[in-house]
Amino acid sequence: MSTSYYGFSGNEDLGGGLSAQFKLEGFFRGDTGEQGRFTGDAQFARTTSVGLSHKNLGTVSLGRTTTQLFVSTLLFNAFGDSFGYSPSIRHYFSSGAGSVTGDTGWNDSVAYSSPNLGGFRFGTTIATKESTTGTGNGGNWSVGMSYSGSGPFAASLVHQNVKKDAAGATPDTTTSQLGASYDFGVAKAFLQYGQIKNTTLSTSTKITGAGVRVPVGAGAVVAQYSAMNPSASADRKTLSLGYLHTLSRRTELYAVAMSDKLDGLSSGGGYSLGMRHRF
Image (cartoon, rainbow, N blue to C red; front, side, top):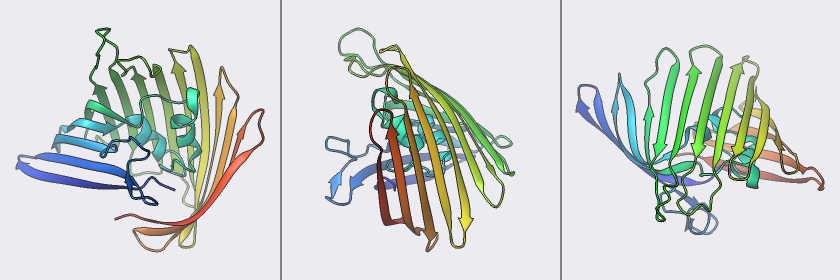
């Protein structure tokens, strides 16, 4: 359901509302004990940063930071950050040439996030240029705004531009995404719409998603659908349905199934039964 990771973090009060912070977070594969999401992944590939935070001015972080696009994508779909079963995460970040380039975290970045301003938050991230060829390639940037007040409505708008590849091996992409959710009490609905433009290949992809989370007893039924419409390849439609059963504040059981259809090919899919523990 989720990529396993561990982390260390710290916070020191410097007085006057200012504090120093750090994070070291790494993925691991529990079946083999290996570091990273895949062979060759960095030890602390999730977040590796230091920063300063002020209660009235916001937070500045330096290092490897999670992108605003990834955070927006996981917040506004019913399956959250599940790379295995969230159709939204799969389409934006792991569906080949039509997906976003530049990973879910950026190295050598400076990120700013504002304090809560009446439910509104603003953030921006810049990743420094890197060039070994003298061509000046590289340099990512993104901006985002979100609203999450005391009521049932929440929304976000994010735009990012990826060019951070000195060797030119990774295509340049620009991505815009609008996400929204509304909690009706008996159910919480999620909507997403985004467009990815691959400026290197001169292609574009539209991604539309909708989902729902319905509380049932000690758990919830979750469903998410996403349609991926690339300009230069086959359309893709993915539907996931599952039940999450809460055992405690940190532990839940899950049962989930997915149908994945690429036009021109027979349908694929998968299912899982398991337990997720957060500590």
